[in-house]
Length: 215
Image (cartoon, rainbow, N blue to C red; front, side, top):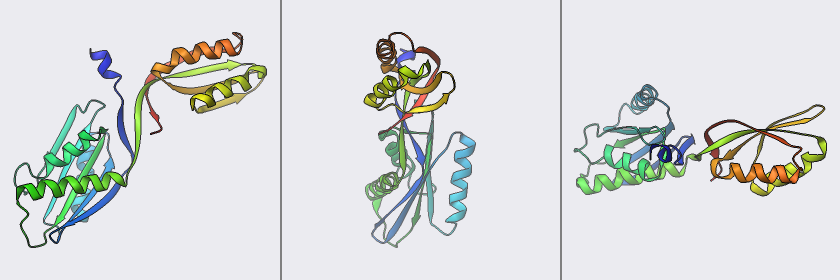
């Protein structure tokens, strides 16, 4: 069971972003960024608090690890459970990992109530996510392929059909390629490449890891 969980896909922020909503004259500004450690998340949160030092609240949440092994959130003075937790739930619900968000609130003079606060902080994070670039991380294999010049055209055709990108190539007396392939496609692709080149292409598995795929 542990092995299957390891292979689950997840999403990460390629680039952060911002979003803003206004609710009863209160401004809610969401700022998101990719982070890879608790220290990095804390530093990001501190930087936003310094940027918006004059705001009433700077609530925060972050999630780390492909299976969300580490999560933290803070209401920063808002009623308990009305800000940080809803913000975290947006990240988890979207499947986003290794991400931190701060929602800055400039108070507009009207109390929103607990339900209103939950909605506002939720919507602010959603607005911020819409302005981020997100990548899907999927467990995959790195392959090395060595072929003669007669086989390269067939290999490029097969890869193009599957939407797979060649990560690096070297042309000497032979052609050497490196590419990343989703784990479930690896076996089928190797078989197709071998058949297409009548066994002349030499395929080597260089390793397994999470790879970014287009979404």
